[in-house]
Image (cartoon, rainbow, N blue to C red; front, side, top):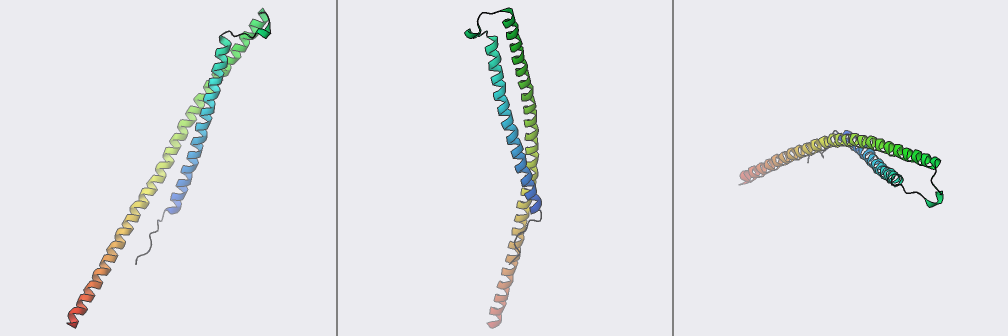
Amino acid sequence: MSAPFRFGLQRVREIRAHDEDQAKERFAASLNARVRGEATLRAAEDRLREAQSGAVSPTLGPLTGASLVSRQAWVERLEQSRADAQLRMANYEAELQQRRGELRQASQAREVLDQLEVRQREQHRLHADRVESAELDEMALQMHARRSAAA
């Protein structure tokens, strides 16, 4: 009976798996931020489109020069808000790509150790099979020698 298989780098593999889990969480958070950013950008674009379409509330009364200037300033603020949202989206996109790369690296690092463990486990099994086979052959030879001596 041979010793049970023990992977010497198990602790390292567990750390790499933990690192991969953390990378997954950071990627998910980044993806969530990007989705929120998309919603913010769509809302800013909708508000700007509405303002540019010239929809005027009837409760504002007659249009005056001051109200037109005020309205133009409002449209400009909405344009700036949209530009800010577009910039944030670009940042979210860049962060998402970075997190995706980190996740890919963490996964590869863990997979390397998983493959090594599988290879070592298979080598251990083959060695145990060879030892067992040799022991069975030796037992068969001893039984044959006893039978030959008894006959």
